Image (cartoon, rainbow, N blue to C red; front, side, top):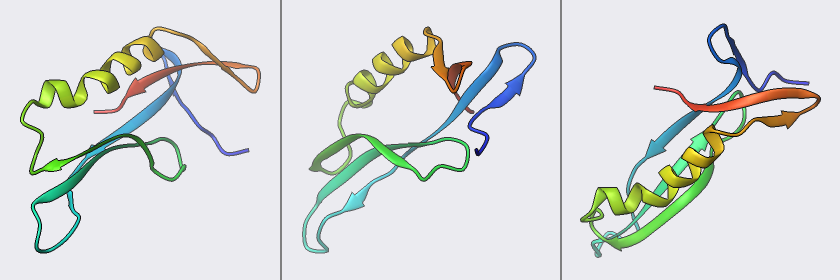
Length: 93
């Protein structure tokens, strides 16, 4: 089994989420972009947690990130049982 967490003397065992936000143009002749919020942890492949599609960058960054941050806030205050171990979820920065 691969190790999915880091041991931190202050927080016990924690899953360290790496978060990436970037833009991808859909077409060369268009200003429509996809803006995914991607996460990864351990040696796992990145996965999409949210997706914005629109003309250019989102105008309101707080609105763009609101659902992601709300869900992370709920998740970070809960303990997760995985393979008999109690884990916490943190964003690595």
